[in-house]
Length: 271
Image 1 (cartoon, rainbow, N blue to C red):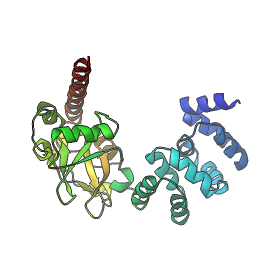
Image 2 (cartoon, rainbow, N blue to C red):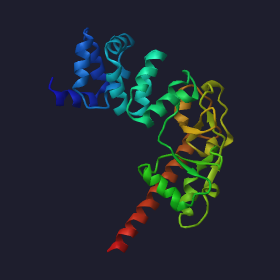
Image 3 (cartoon, rainbow, N blue to C red):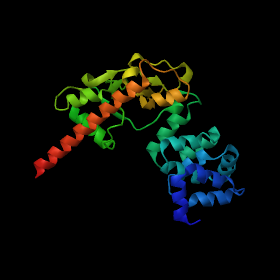
Image 4 (cartoon, helix red, strand yellow):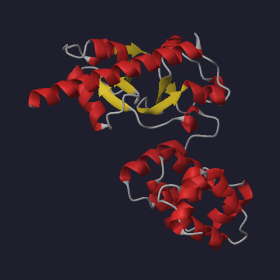
């Protein structure tokens, strides 16, 4: 199979590619096949392998190979691959990753036990201070990639979590001087070390589709979605899941519309 065709197959059907990969009894041949797909996809393919095939492959791959895969993969795929390694080897692989930020994030998450909030936490949040203006909040969102669906965590002066940005209020007050603390849904964060089954969901859960997750020092490390908690067997929050999702979609739509309007007006002024 040609390299381009192989890579396209892996992208379109990672599960199918993993099944094909697992049919090989030669781990070195499996590594050669993985070398023929796009960078960043290796961890996703390994996640689809049967346990015996994955063990055979990972025991043959070098620490350097694994660190290269993880460095270009999504943080969640990288974390799943580390979960298939022993604690000692996982620590070695993390240490050999060149990107300091990636090393730090993986060290934070790899220490949380299976079934914990930390195991399910996702990155990709924007963090702003309670005193930030709407302009500063928008700038922080833009620096993070400008995604209107990216959760925004508002922190107190001491670095602890105050709550989540209320997107609807933010859009309504975009041209005001209100601090972020006035545009926030106050909420207690979930601690990463807490087992999912014993997690207590706050009353504000019905206004949100995700909650902030903090480490043992109370510092935000990411977020966890309602869907992830429910799939893991966690308790449902108050209110309707469907209604909460609809409300959040409306909020995100208005944020996108607001940002698009500002961009269009700026373009007209430039002319």
